[in-house]
Length: 420
Image (cartoon, rainbow, N blue to C red; front, top):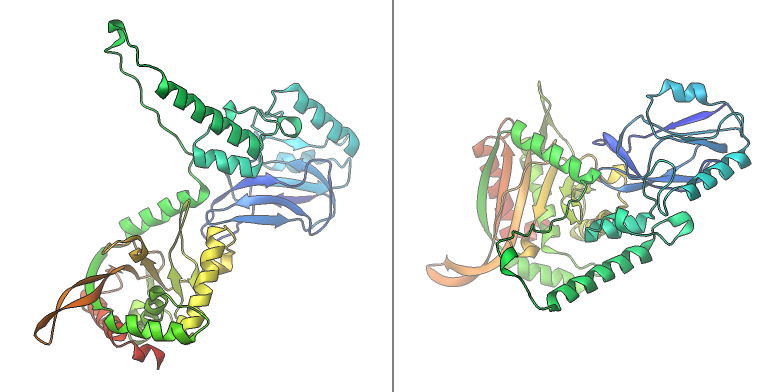
């Protein structure tokens, strides 16, 4: 009996997916555990393995085309098996590459290959561009239209070398145009030349970021509280800790730990709005925003109040690396109860952040800046860091948010309390 594979839901926020690459073609033998395809979700590119043994009889989704969860993706069964009834159950109009019940597996493969050669040099039977995932990524980054590239790979497939050659040719052409003498007759002096631009398709990740943050900003009534924190003591303590520890901690690691301890003292901040009730969590899971090429990911460090500074530092580095390599799994980004966004390393002194659902608050952390401060009646140089707490007013009141920031300030200005 033929087995059906639908576009799976690979994250809690995923509503549609994109096939980044197929690793099996119609007519190929498939075993349980074989890699079928790579799926681009809203947060990562993940591998999909087969749970079944048999022959791939059907591919229902084009590479690069967004489709909703539940779309018929593939059918695996016996060679020559009739799958028309299964296909008919799903919505018509999908691009279909299937093995007919009257053909053998060998005939199916031959037919597919023949049809490919009858089309253009880099398009298959449904006129989509044939391109390797790496070449597609490079082209998107450089703003290069794939339809203008001649593929040199198998059956006209565009590969990395083709994209790089095209980019080099365009660069040379631009250089030649710049070096050519500007000769313009009076007849065309008033001609307006249209400026160049690049249209980039929105990735699944960027779509989800836009939707979730728009929902957050317009559904949760935000208010913002900003406080200055003197970081002189924590600068010295961090030096001492890093001098004796194999794990080198960042200032953000200390902020994460201090926030976790402050949340324990102010549990109403560690909560979510659920419409008819407010859920207060008895654990502290901190989401740490990480910037990647396509947007912002928020991997989660669990039970941070129970972990040491070095444990937090190690886990943060591991999750950040996985985020940048698109290797995060659902367990890595689910379950946050509070979020921290730090732009201090980019030279930002102060900013406000949009709350990351379902959290009640998000803390925006700026850079540490030397500035003149008054200490014991004297003007001295101090290292000041500004933090801004964005609060959901449905859950958190002003006094509640201010009390939380006061506790956080005390912990960071008297950092030995963090280590106790």
